[in-house]
Length: 199
Image (cartoon, rainbow, N blue to C red):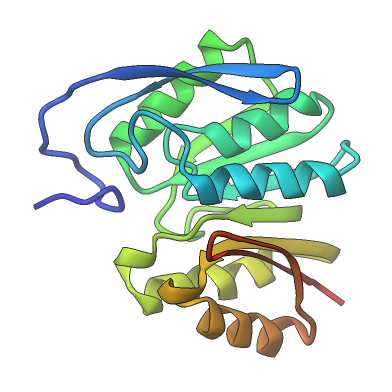
């Protein structure tokens, strides 16, 4: 059986379209079976977008890890067109949708490509955003956290959204060990936005 964190999707295609809104900005998004949160943006990803955009000032290099069909990276790229946003996922169907959604919304300041965790990422970034694939297991989540640290510029920050019941204490501990600092930027409905800055 394929999951949203599988490379190949063997579930039948059944496209759904919806509009994602942040303040005055809108994205028209196409989603499909076999991708995470088909049909609407999940609460955690939306919270991550809203918290990050209140912090960010633009003109930054940003990596969206596990981008899915693209709501996080595309909204960040749309709000700040001067940003350079890389979007990665292991799921081939999700990447096709992200490319299509970027084109359909006229967003050109994004680079979308396949990567298992951050294995195929060559650049370094000012910020890494992730709603990690919890169901893929703790080992995969820790790999994303570890590799994110390696790919951040000095003073760069990692932003993670994670539910308390799905491993927040473990992720918080790992980020503290890696970065030497941790900040809880938001708590809402069991979701936490964690931020660590590379020294």
